[in-house]
Image (cartoon, rainbow, N blue to C red; front, side, top):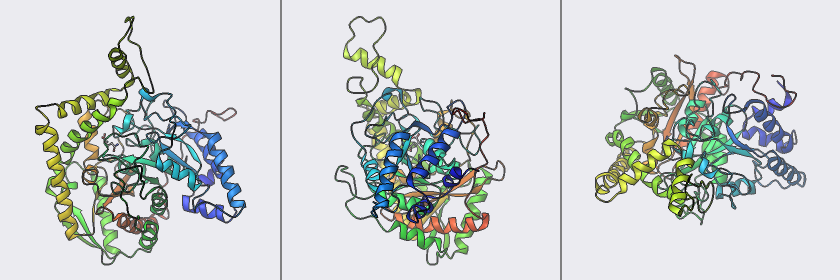
Length: 519
Ligand code: GLN
């Protein structure tokens, strides 16, 4: 293992400590991650393909500035100089933002998303933009117009979605930290199937300004990391009130890092944990269920009281989501009209095309099948005569799901379930079966509908296939600190058992396309 690769296996907190101790520079760290990206990311045909765009120059310039600040004795934050990857649905000034879609190919935003601006102000070099299902629609990253990302645990398998790029980048040591977005599970489910930590914060807890919206009432930005503490550090850095987002919560975040540190001591006495009856059993892979039960035992050993809690309306969450989400998406995607930005396709054989004709040709060429499917679904659900029957009904179900959460949180402090019903499936396995694809989000969607926060923590490998399993913790809105306390306690118990974090197998040689690299 080269010295460079060694730095890439450290956690963000360890890297920040090493920077503070003067053991390494940000330029060295950033270069080590750029080297790793060059060595394993390859293309969509082979390699992890976590990145759609790598900004080596920009990242190294930010790293040099970070080193200068530190030399002058004034680092901006604890994480100053630690590199990060950003999902390609967040706008980045001067860096392409495609949302995994052809329709935004070549678009370079004139502004930074608030979370990106906060990363830059905090001194984190941005390595690049990560791959995703087109407009964040999917659970496998196979709906990216630029080809799929592969799971570092098994390159023939999907890394989950829509944020498979961010999760795979972190799992494959291409980045110590990443940002994702979660509308129905797109941070937590990829986290589960790649053995990484993923957090969907409370709705309104992290700014959505500059997040290209799929479904505004469900979308949240959140951290993707290898440890619970790293997630807390990143969450505190990007979270908190933003006057540019009208849904942003105007109150300070709870002490997330403090909660993670407290949890890591392994003491959960006094904590009441509710196992959601409806989020287990039939449809959940045996190895997923086994790791889940084992994690529950560890929580009990840490002093928590575990009870079963029923949330009867959760069985309708998926159906409600697939009415509400396409409805909002169909309205959001109307702005891609070929007039303002991105792709413009002129219809063939039409000498003097109207704006409508250009729009039609552009959308036909620019949007993929899944996006078209959801625009049609959403437009139908919102059309006059059907609005009450579909959209109105789904909103009522959404209220009932929020009430289930309220009733549950009157009895327990957190709710738990497996994050995803199965481990990573094979590339192509569910691509032609939208319903099978949608079922991956069974356990993650209720949190988005109710706006409550959730975390997925690696819970080990399923016995039957040796692939990562995620353990989900849900907390009441604004109590994100509970996720970190419980997550860190579970992680500490599991790491003690495994002798450290989960480590994917070495990636095969021959992915390195750099000049002089041995193939
Ligand atoms: N997989 C879900 C969907 O396809 C969730 C996506 C997301 O959270 N962005 O809509």
